[in-house]
Structures are given as structure tokens and as C-alpha cells.
Amino acid sequence: MKQILKSFSSIVLDFIETVVIGLSIFLVVYLFLLQPHQVNGLSMFPNFHNGDYLLTDKVSYRVGSPQPGDVIVFHAPPAANCPEGTGCDFIKRVIAVPGDTVQVKDSSIYVNQQRLDESQYLDSTVVTSEGAFTAGGRITTLGTDEYFAVGDNRPHSSDSRAWGPVMADEIVGRAFFRYWPAKDMGVIAKVVPR
Image 1 (cartoon, rainbow, N blue to C red):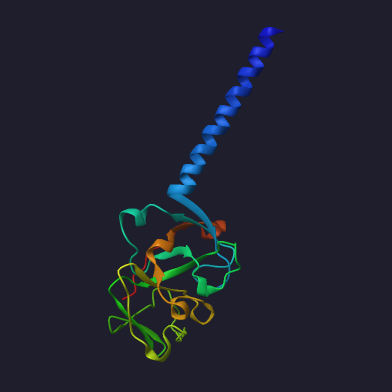
Image 2 (cartoon, rainbow, N blue to C red; image 1 turned 60 degrees about the vertical axis):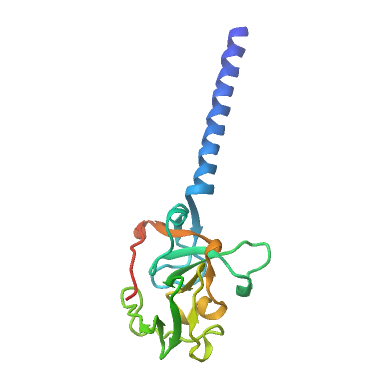
């Protein structure tokens, strides 16, 4: 009987040890390396659909910085009016980086006074309208920790055109892998607006 109890307690301790190690690995990965996110809404349509599941790389921007064309996940700014306490995150495409000038005019985005060719990820019929932040053809120079990020579905995206640049410390990471739906599974291709 003593042998059976000893054997049973050994199995239970092994199980608990396995669970603790597994949870520890999960927490390290989740907090420091990768984080899952779900796309909510149509602001990145047609490149990302409502309900897509993505993995966000949280390491890249600790050793580098976002580049034009990167699809980033960041904490929604207060001006986006997310419900309080939801901790909502946005997914948008970086269009301009620190030191760049940005202007929205003639249904297009101009970075450093050059009209962006966004044909790699936008349909030619997409019209880029001004928002409250870019109204009147306002030219904005991004500060050292500011990024201009917009949705691919310009008519239906709340983005930097409306509430201004994204601060570097609000960026969670780079969306790099879509794992659901299975038919769209794969690495998210990097495109660079020209």
C-alpha cells in the first residue's frame, strides 16, 4: 500500500511539474516573444479580414524599428474612443517613420513630398481621404518616436489621419504570421510603399 501511495504521489508531482514548466514557457513566449491577435473590423480589408488570427512578433522592434510597409499592432490611442478597460489594440500599416513629412491630398498620401505608390496592397480605386488630423492638406513632420499608420481599407479605417501619429512605446509588435483561417495561413509578406 505504501508503495502504491508513493508511486501515485510521484505521478502527481511529475504532472504538476510538467504543468508548471509548460505554463512558464507559455508566459515567457506570450510576454516577450509572440502574442496572438484577432483582426476585428474591416479597416485592413482586403488584405486582412474580420476574424483573422495573427501572431505578433514582439522582439523585432526591441532590436530595430518599424519600417514603411510593416503591419503593426499597437494600443489604440485615447482619441480612438475604445471602450474603457477593453485594452483594445489596432492593426495598421506603417506609411511613414520618424523624421518623415506626411500629407494627404488629391486622394493620396505624400511622404516627404512624394506621392506614395501603394499599388502593392491597395486597389487602384481606393480613395484616401483626409481625416481630422490631416485636414486641409496639413503637412506633419513626425517626431523621433512617431509613426504614421493607416488602414488598407481607407474609407473605413480610424487611423493616423484621424488621431495623429502612433507613439513608439504604444507599439506591441509586427504582425508576421496569419494562422487562421487555414486557407490563408502563412507569413505576412512585407511590402514597401514607394
